[in-house]
Image 1: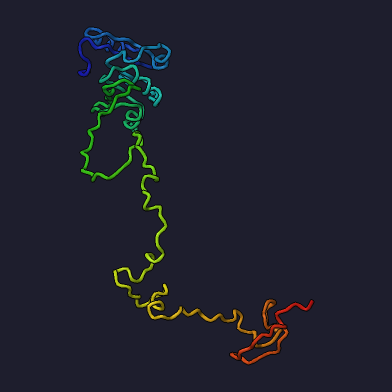
Image 2: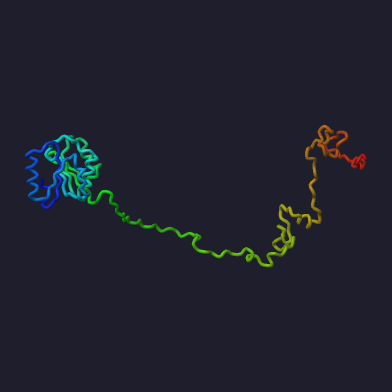
Length: 251
């Protein structure tokens, strides 16, 4: 009873039968605080406003065996003012401390006389608060090139990148890979014809070979467009001359 201070508003919840001991304790409490007596089965029907009481005493005398369910404990926490306390006895003590914590109470303790004392947090049930998180120190990040989409950047006209000299047709001789150092000299593996030109030789054309390589075997192995169709087979590598008559149509 030392937790009850002068001027507190107390809700005394009882069950079972009214006894002389109950009346005695209530009268003692009324000498220093405001006391409202309510039956455990009629607490919800009383429609008390939230945060009405500083202290709730429930089954303080241990005269009834009804268990305090999570629903009842949750209703009590709404009726208690922030930082107010619930002093309660329960028929079963195993796991009851966890029930009080789940109902929203903090600083739950079991006294030597068997009573449990639990405190309502210093805020209303369902209240919200803005968290002021300390911003982390930003590490130095290397600045990289980026394009801001919010700014209108002037795009360069591609036609302005070329002048009249760039549009002129270049001299083919200037496009040679060889002889670009002033003195005309062919590269070691010249393929542009400069080596033959400097040597006075015409570029050699590669001799065309048969794509199938089986023309000499006879018509059975020749393609439909083979110029040797109708001619007898010949030896590989033998030079065959096609007469003018074969190149003319029969009609």
